[in-house]
Length: 398
Image (tube, helix red, strand yellow):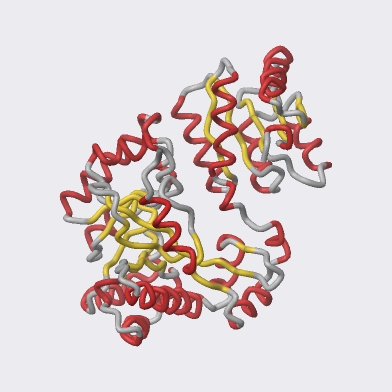
């Protein structure tokens, strides 16, 4: 998308600052610009739009409805594709607001510190293009449980794969399997739109089994072609309550001639304690059978240390919310550094999600992280395109 096609809204109560932002956008070639004099005015305009703008630049410190509340409404009502936080306030506060927006499912292109300049603005807008390949499908709005369940039964819910590479040598050593719904009309629905529906509707086990089976099927094919990769598969929290899951997962992987130690099962840190006795028993049995266990999204829950002390994890996965942009955010870097130090003392392999910038890669490498995963390496792709994605990563830049 060229700058001339980009649709941007500026939400700023100070008239002079707003005019500067509009002028800078014009200099960049952004012709389709809207302006909101405050949060309430911006929401009023956004709700009238049939197509949400690509980016909303939101100042935080505004009278009446402040920018934080405005961003909350934008996120919950899906009134924009992405936001940029603009402020001269404390960086720690800016980070908190970005985390809040991401928790609502809104894409955040980062924060821009005042005074606004052309270079700062251009840098933020360029991040929109970096993520273009992972846009949720617009048709996701008509998804309900029945349609999602039907898609799962029909085999439309498939695994896409995102490579994981070693910091030490840049070698691709594994992939994470990620659920995607490939609709018959050619549309693509991302997991946040249908996975919660399937889990709440009692199909958590069916979904996890499907993803594990899909991942093993592709691994068998890649192994046959000489590319041996570990596979990581997310285990639905609700599947942890099923005592038969350990034997079932073992049967699935062995049916493809795959050893359990070539499979890592990712468990979100908030999921185990919902039924501690069953969850701990299942995870102990999975580890006994040889499966690797990864604590996923580490740092986003409230029982991280308890989880690590009680469960035989083999891997710690640092959440993308801490990794992305950490090179420029001291607080994020501190969390990443502390997580890596803790994992090192516990003998866990470390994986950083959301590695998008060379600067973050360099920082993580210096801190001793083991494995990287993120858009800097490759976006998630169908199994048939994985080899091409790996080749693009390996190809030296000229």
